[in-house]
Image 1 (cartoon, rainbow, N blue to C red):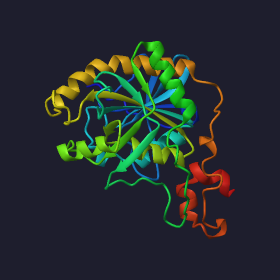
Image 2 (image 1 turned 135 degrees about the horizontal axis):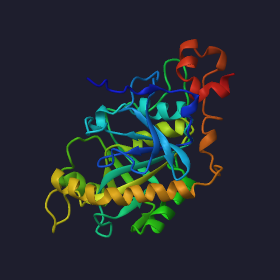
Image 3 (image 1 turned 120 degrees about the vertical axis):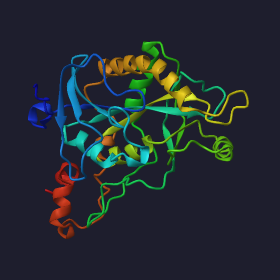
Length: 299
């Protein structure tokens, strides 16, 4: 009887600089060569799944299925802290996030992509910071996505032949239920562009981890507000996700191929003036827990 191969533990040879987080409909990254499953232990528990490290367009990348392969985790069940911290431990400096969203505007049509530059938080049950337990930090978050990385993704959409909308606000709701009609109308009155359930939490943690973060929001439906469309259903979403999956993979490949060698943003120094707690008062346990993030500031 064959023994199932176990994922290996992360080591120095797994160091990568680009992370890809796949959402609904994107549970693997075709074209990833030399792929190996790596299990990363974090102070915040287990990530959503094993990390898959390999080569894409001659670049070392790591892929992680946000909801786990087979889609096993609700948005509120995802261990976002472990996911982002695992990326940090693997050396990731940039995260390309792919997720399904509903459209809140007529001109944002299903099967099109949007690269949001703003988020609005309507979550209630999320652990969305690495800090606490004796160490306090407040990062700047007025511009929650990386402008350089967002530009790379938008350009990749153009080259992949995918209609893309540059900029917009992603309202992040708790879920797992879809919006009520009243909520959808309020979101439209507030001039939000798309709605989803995951990306804001990732963006907050990526900023604290000093990782560039940008989103490819794949539009699957018109939420429930559109008078000429039925209320959103899982069947409709899955059908459009399947149609979008190949486009998303092409966009990611184009983005990795065009990635600048150096970061021109300030994401990599987000904590430089954010840690408030006096260094001598930070408990040893907190220093150890957050070593990958704050170590360079406390040494």
